[in-house]
Image (tube, rainbow, N blue to C red; front, side, top):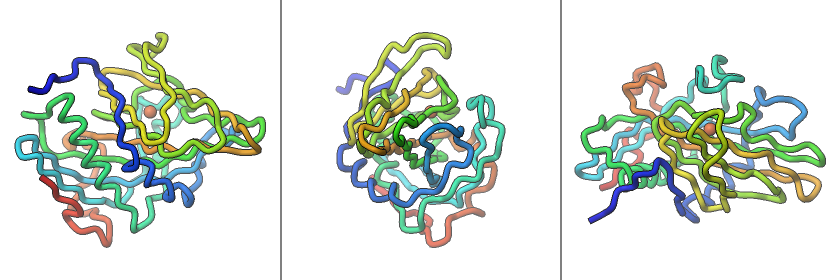
Length: 245
Ligand SMILES: [Fe+2]
């Protein structure tokens, strides 16, 4: 019998499932809302309608048209801006990592009895550090993402130090957990319960970068996508790009 996790976060080891996404980070778009006087960030966003049936383990993933990103009160810097973010390129398929995410959540905090429909947002973010300019992964400070579950996965660290991940019980407290994720590791967090942050990165050569995939799982009924998913299926995406049991 599996012992269910009582704490609200865990460290995952997806390994190459995560690091194999590294080439996607060589062609990201600008993050025009990132504060000046930092090394800057680059990013893309893929959004998905997904279903997960805890009874059968069946998962479906359908890529949607990327909409402007709106976080609301959860991001005190830019949460109320509708931020257009470049979509991931057409051949990007993150469904295997989404599937891994659902299974990881189910193993720790069973979703039985919860709704089966989800919005899954996958942010690919590169934080740059150049010379003495630090890279700032989290300009908004200690925060929640405003999702139900969040996976923060390290894809690559190239010539950087820092970028320590912190987890907090309270927005104004001290972290009760910290770790520097190595590429292939991820943090799974119950975003409703805990807060998180990451420290700046410093280049150890002329420039460096820290590549992360941030995957937010929203119950679909929370209406974060704001449109009927059937009207916004990404062109070229099959309705069930991935179905597994
Ligand atoms: Fe976050």
